[in-house]
Amino acid sequence: MRNSVSCNILKAIDEYLISKGVSEEELPQSVDGYRKMLQKYVSIHNGKLLKSFEALYRELHIAGYYRGLLIDVNVVKEVFKSAKALIDKIH
Image 1 (tube, rainbow, N blue to C red):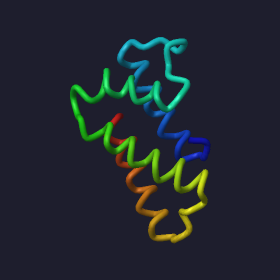
Image 2 (image 1 turned 45 degrees about the vertical axis):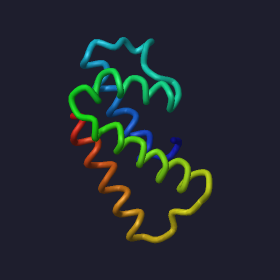
Image 3 (image 1 turned 180 degrees about the vertical axis):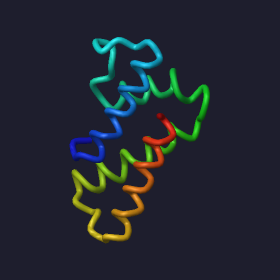
């Protein structure tokens, strides 16, 4: 997840995790690490957030970054709205 929207999502998750007592050294370094942390700290309160994270990961990172499939402006706008909604839910 290397684009700026993805980075903002990860930063929001990092801030949330820190607020829950996770030290900066313990923050995830991979998407699998983020999945585990979301399952541990977020899913117990809201299982939909992990599903949103997974969907955004596939859209932004896999389809957008690796495969270059995000070309329709309306689709990109919807993905950005979803990213903002996830960030807002975490904060």
